[in-house]
Image (tube, rainbow, N blue to C red; front, side, top):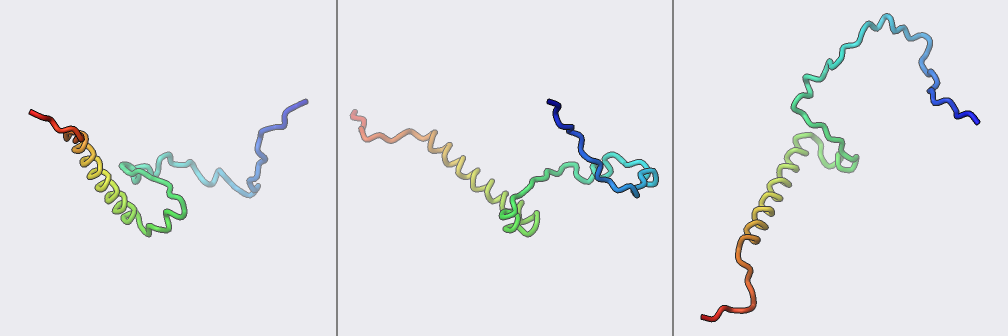
Length: 89
């Protein structure tokens, strides 16, 4: 039994003239995105933030809170543990 062909059908219209388009430019808009990290948000999350600045502000607040939590956890680890036994001289 032969496997079905995996070639996709050619759905382009015959009136497209690729010769008139000329040659494409590779990386035409790449310079604009340098130093930028793009993240795809789920639709319900995107609805909560009207602008990219709003997203950045919320993420900065989360980072600030988690940094405080990490610092306080580190302080608790360094402090001596309190026990119910008291040392007698």
